Length: 276
Image (cartoon, rainbow, N blue to C red; front, side, top):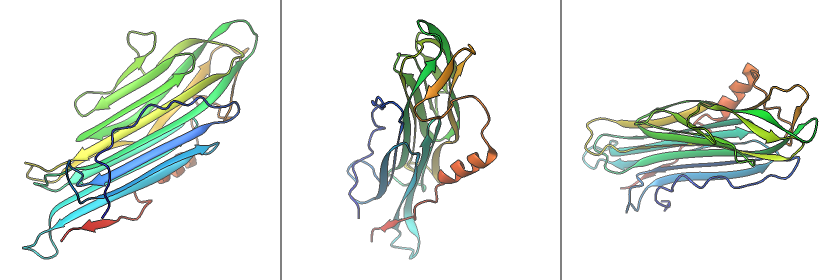
């Protein structure tokens, strides 16, 4: 039986300024089942990965079952949760899900957070600022008690963020603007090293308390979270530390198939904890 900290919060914002010609990726996935406050028995799994000049991917799951003493082989309550993530320069993917059977009073939860940090220069004629278009393309869906948020921020102070939950539709916020979508244009210095940090995090939880049927919740942002950088002035060229172009062009279908497989929930073997 594991003793796991009670439902950790969804972590602090990335605070890393990368060195030149390098990038970093970070991934944290957590699952817990029957992890209500004061609970002493539950299943859990977690993993944190920090890589330099390498992508990060992982998946975890948890399963907790309470047997029915009056019906051998049956269970009074079943709690299950999963979480997965994949991240590389310009690409963020995260997913989490949780479920609990009817009348199950405690909680199952899953969360995933992926981040990457990179740097770039806009090479060209010196002594001026130029317009840089920053795009945070988000594709995902929520169901039940789930939430998602994300952020792309430059060391110049320019940023795009979004939030979404089961009660509030997706909304974006951009620095220096009253309202925006996931795309904004900022004036940035040329021939200057600029750092870039991007975050995508999701969470899902489920409890069957006072509910007559199975309760399920999910946050599926395992399809696309993309960061683009665009320059309209052809005299300038973007050069990133990772070598990633950040250009808004379609990626090969084979890439998406590979990335999707990394985000599958079946990477780690399901572990069971049963209390007699």
